[in-house]
Amino acid sequence: MLYRAKYIVLAAVFGLAACGFEPLYVEKTSGDDLWYYNNKFDTDIVREMAQIKVETVTDRLGQMIRNELMDTFNPYGTPKCAKYFLRIQPANTETVQQALRDDITATREKVKYTVNYSLWSKDDGQLVSGRSWVYLSYDLLDNPYSTTMDKKKVEKDGAKIIANDISLRIGAYFHSIKTKRGNPNEF
Image 1 (cartoon, rainbow, N blue to C red):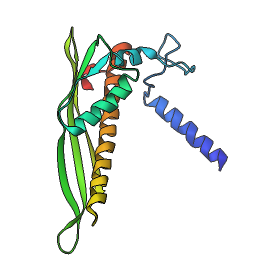
Image 2 (cartoon, helix red, strand yellow):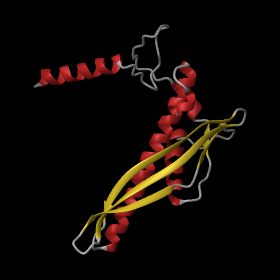
Image 3 (cartoon, one colour):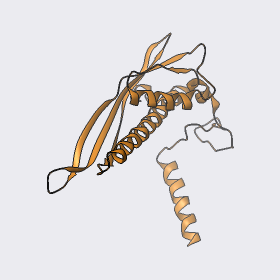
Image 4 (cartoon, rainbow, N blue to C red):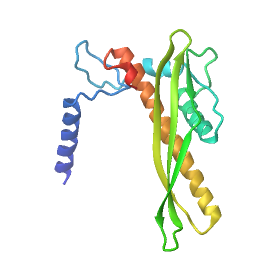
């Protein structure tokens, strides 16, 4: 069984290498298109992302997304002289009832959170913009408190997922600028 796991891992590594996978935060150690991991992380992208100031948002979900992004981009505090500004539009929430009982009352709700964002520079104007969304669901229970807590948990999880998606897209944008690969406007 142990040998089978080794072969699966090797197949995954070679499969990713064959499709052009390139780690985002790994320092490239050779001059050509080949690279290998040498336990050093490429801090250029992290330094660029630390220069992002996340602007305030009016709605609660946007505030939670902003807090997650601030923890990701600026773990040591907001930069005094920010080079970039991230604007997050208030979140759009769509709710659909699912799993109906015999009396046509729902026992589950599916929620879609959608957030538009744009990264701006003082010098260059808008650099990249995009939309991030997530589908989540929660149970509608007989106890209203439990339903409320379930709803808050889904909102918190949604904010975390959207913030991770936005930070990955912005990291990919900076990576494409640095490596001159890909189209930076696609993120």
